[in-house]
Image (cartoon, rainbow, N blue to C red; front, side, top):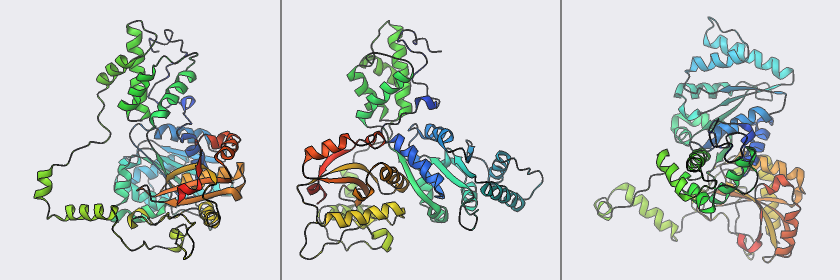
Length: 451
């Protein structure tokens, strides 16, 4: 029990680093991501991937899934990803109560398939949650791909969710991982908390631990926590806990910048991303290198070079905007570098709302407003599909639209709602949105901003 609990009128430690589902923070898109994950898993979406930095809340999200999935979903949780191929099969068989003593690999897989078919016939789904999947040996990742092939005539018998650090994306980019990569149908990412979310996060944890009244953390202290932690929830917890202890040690009831600086000194955090300045001399020495030539070409392109438009499958390009002679109302959303428009398999709801956007934007007046509900990286297909599913239940689905844009320099998808004659009308409508939609922090935007 922390020494400072009574001092700060707390019932339990608010900033422990072990995942405790009572302290799940649904802000900063965590709640919508959880809902979208549940939707993806229960809708037979195959392999699902969740990527986040160390300490971003992946394990907490995984624990929340274990609690929130419907009763007909049987969960298998694999916390040790460094198991060998054979050990993974053994761990899954053990979770399902399948005897494996002395059985060859193919016999184990057959027994596993039989057990999954039996559960499927009884109306149950089975999902395998793998934490820290980036640490899996290559042969074990290959076994995950093979397990994803277990299916009935129409449905997957085993849903798989991978929780991993960004290193997994680097591994999946390798040519020998392409078969597994193409079986991942939904992608989610847990971004670090934004500075404005850190205060809400700290306040939520304090109140969940029984605190009442004004926050003991001053505004400068919270600002410093956001800066030092780089938005990672585990680091926020460590800094806040150490700072409360430091304030308690000197009899203070308020935590200020001095306590945060002392906590940071004790924590010894490494920078999330190491930044290095370019050395002009080394650049001149390497001017003939292929890497520098590529950099120069990329910079030249970003400052106005013309490159032929990207190509791809009809599904992957269905949401792109093609200028029509004589019309200038459609937003130029897809005239960005080809590398920014990747071939991504969007879900059926996303494709439907892309089409609705294309129809709407043709006649939408520039001065009108809409409500921006969500904006996220295009690769987060699961988050997009899940959000649209929830929004379509709470709002008029005919007023929901989705668009894809790379004008910001990143491949992004936006989800918008409504068509209003003024900003005031959009703001009034925004106040009537369900709380589940408000959690994504919507805001009014003018149609002209899409052009």
